Length: 243
Ligand code: 16G
Image (tube, rainbow, N blue to C red; front, side):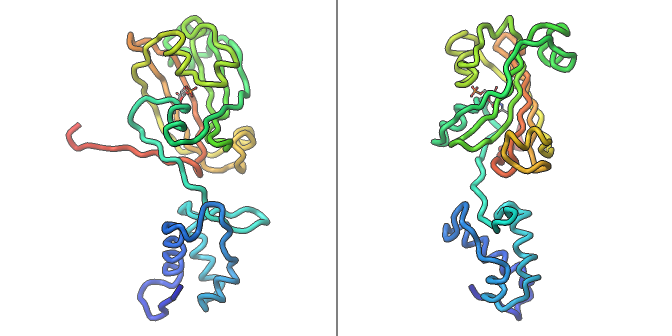
């Protein structure tokens, strides 16, 4: 790695680009520890402050993660999720060759509160399933999902079913036709309870998705709040000027 001190490109930026190139070309792999500030400073013949600035930028851009007391590591590659197509978590992970699993946190029938009832288009206090699951891929927590489903529509849910795939049950067993959904995406940070379940620090970045999904006949069958780990997920949306 060579630094050109006469270049108009700031030194910290040159360092940043060289580390980034190593990651992109596979010379540094996810979870690899990177050298310390001191080592880089010696190697490049620059001050530790300059190295720190480069590393800070790489941490802020998601290429590196700092772990308290352990050092700085190359980030895990984020799961790329297309925003087109109404797919389930199980399908999404299987398509990527990852093993989906669930950790059931909570499962019961409750009377729907106002906000849930209005999304599901049912009277307040209508019995709904409240399901809270940590969704994992290759045993790493990806999202925390709280799902509300009308109990008289999505009949016979059990914790065993919930531990597999909800969409498989709805289509394969109940023979209901899933049609479309509307969803909102928002930036957020992990609350204390979420951070424990997602195995991130309190205040870590979260992508919050609120989804209401409908059957072919227009009946809403689920209202879902999903908190995705910001360090593991990125969403990709294709846009066309003509639609
Ligand atoms: C996805 C959906 C969620 C659906 C779940 C079913 C988003 C934001 N949410 O997580 O609405 O309930 O898949 O997954 O994509 P399952 O069939 O694996 O249980």
